[in-house]
View 1 (cartoon, helix red, strand yellow):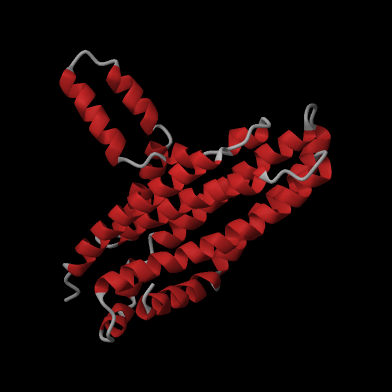
View 2 (spheres, helix red, strand yellow):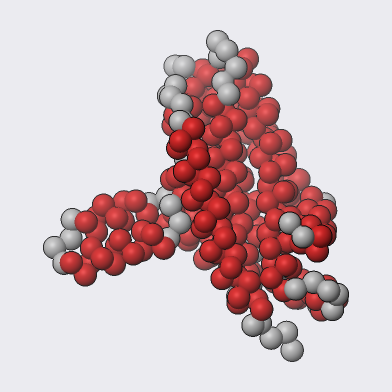
Length: 256
């Protein structure tokens, strides 16, 4: 990472980490995780499984909220405040600005995911027979999904309004969890064109189920290293393509 990208990333990290709404979301998420302890006491069944299920769902939900809320304003906020003129008047290329903003937010999301995952790990260990490292693995999968959503939000933020960016990003989030079903349904179509279109859409749209390792943890399974490696490769390739497109769009953007 070049010094200019790192500088933009650090400044973005500092800005987002000071956001009061971020702290409100994080506090509420930690409260829900803490309440899962009491919920487990009131429930019938495997207490450790209930805590893992509720806690990971909480990390996922509030992580997506933070990624979308902060991601949609990555570029548009700088344009609205006119601070983008000051930044780009320095020896900072537009693509470095976009990549640096996305990297800074990914750093913020890493910290917030860690802050939520560690308490869940400790609470789960209090009920389980042994510490479950799968909690941390599943949380890492959630974080990888948030990174991809951040890149998508950066793309949409580079050419449209925050409201539309939020709609587009949330749409990608929902589609990303059913894209495999789209391929299955398309393969059953009688028309060859429909099968080809469904296949093309499957590879173009994000497949967020690649990072969904929650069920393995909740039901006692384990994600294989090969699966994690493939998911990491998919994340790098998809994020690189999305950020490349975002950089191309932003480089042609007229601020006059």
